[in-house]
Length: 585
Image 1: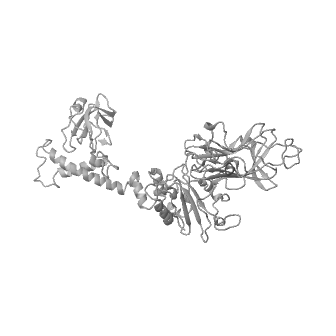
Image 2: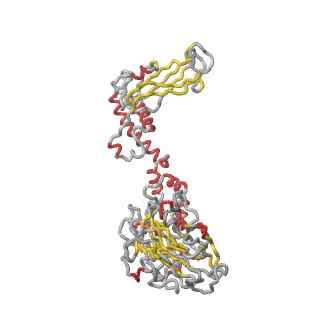
Image 3: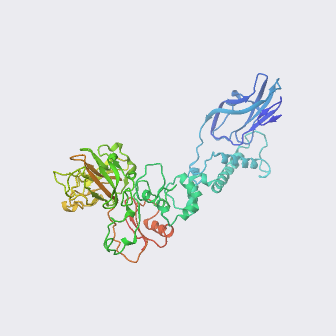
């Protein structure tokens, strides 16, 4: 009796037939099989039969290495082999089980012709694909035996002869072609999601917009969440960045959206957004459009009061969490409530003599800096670093001075350098330039001198775009009329601003920092127009080389943005054509 691959009685026969032909085989040298329960008196008689064309088989002969190595094989043959294992011996007790058999030999990979390689099929299958070979041999067998091709076309006159070779080669070629078409069709309909190219075509035909060379797992997510993606159109979900295990870059996405998406939002995919690309999406508050006292005027282009374009660490004016900031010597920094002004501020206090603490990173150890909180920038955009600074009055325990100004005999201010460290895409430190001299310069203010204590001073440092002309000494100064504004070099992609407190005379010192922001300095146009609502400004690097800027804007207008929104795109470098920005008005 035979159960599965086991034989319990002498004379039981196991017949193993191969259904998928082997191509590329040039010789067989030996075999290895695994038999369970075999002894000197309980064993299998092993035989095999083979076919070079997949149709005509030889007689069964003993399975041994010499018989296998005597087979003449060509790499173009469709080689099949069958095994016959017969239980033999004198011991009829126990079970004899066949587990596996392995052939050893030489193999050469078949090379598909140039015609096939240039066809649409090559990207989904190859000529030795198992499914293609199996279907091909099945149909070739039907064409070889009687019933399909008329009998007057002679074949199989002499069994196992080479007379039918031309017939088999011809019909196998025909069957192979149709096998490719059939298997391609099956995969196109039933298994397209297993093939990235087909899956990408499917999603594009469904109307979703993808990056160039989208990742397979992203496309699978979009296929499974198709209706969610359509539902998210017209919402801020279209500009959310993919949640990544890579180091995040501080930007509008991370400050505006609590958690990233599983894939980039559809607008980011449309413009083929990359990790280091600058992208700012600014839905302007109505008070910053037209003529609004203390907020906007017809020719005003500034963005200082618009927190929606903030790229720094908190959108609130108050300091809510120190975790959001890059801090150097954080043991001297804490949150503090300024009761006199009712502001929650960052306080830098009790820095040891000649010590340094504040917002930023160690200026003497860039290679070991923590780049978790770098800010993404673009060298063709002007940016401003703004904050409010205050030197609070010391307690009586700290000083007996009652004056609201500093003198050499009283409490001395700390030295307060302000500036920005810049880096390329690989985190290599790169110097900024002075907008006055064009020489390397990272310090906009080497030491701020405040006129009064207990008074907040507004500080603005501008980093101009790389092609900004140099300015005169007066025009290059910061808003405090001292120091110098800065300028980008070409390779800069990231910045970390710094505001340090360096104790100069004693460890008794205190400094408040409030409303720290990094924003684009201005728009290339004014927002003085009237009777418009829901106006959006978008800074972007348009990397989609298959679409023009006008086509991108039409897709945004038609599919991605709400119908009652007007927008204007500000194209940065790396776009596929010269800057233009028709938008919708």
